[in-house]
Amino acid sequence: FLRKKIPTTPTTDIIPGITEVEIDPITTVDYKRPDTIPTQPVAQPANPDETYAKQSARIFVERFWSYSNQNDNQHIDDAMELSVDSMHTWIVSQAKAQSTEYSGVTTEVLSSRILSYTTLAATVEIGAKQTTEGTGTDGIVVRETKNITAKVDLSKVGAQWLVSGLWLE
Image (cartoon, helix red, strand yellow):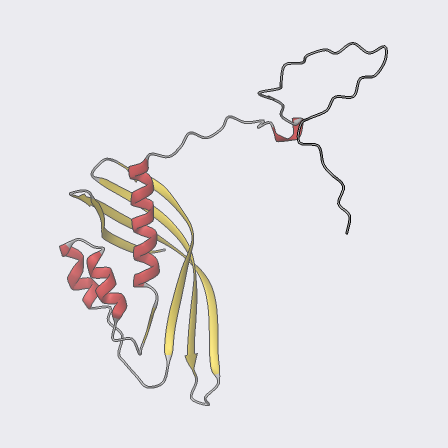
């Protein structure tokens, strides 16, 4: 093997008749392609507290309306932690009978928007996809998917948004 020796100091080739000119380095480029320039005003960032209220509503809906008849009503326990005390009796009344024949519901929130907001109360509209699955009497798995819309009322308790009302539309 023969290796070519690489010089350790930079070399400059001089071209006859060319004068060396020093150019300042480019530090910033402010170029935007015409197709990337917004044509409408850019939306202002959301109020962090409104975002927290929306997230609380989303989490509640997904946990409360996702359940099976074989999980000891875990969705009830989850919902109790995310709601005000006055909702607890109604939430407990929504417990599902347990069974060896599986049936369950999975809810996936697709959208949420604030309908009303103050520093102490908010109403959030939730759009979700709900999939119900179960085993029929003949042993065949049956699956049905539907879109649902719900309104969720929230109350600010300390620093936490808790669900104070839930309506399926």
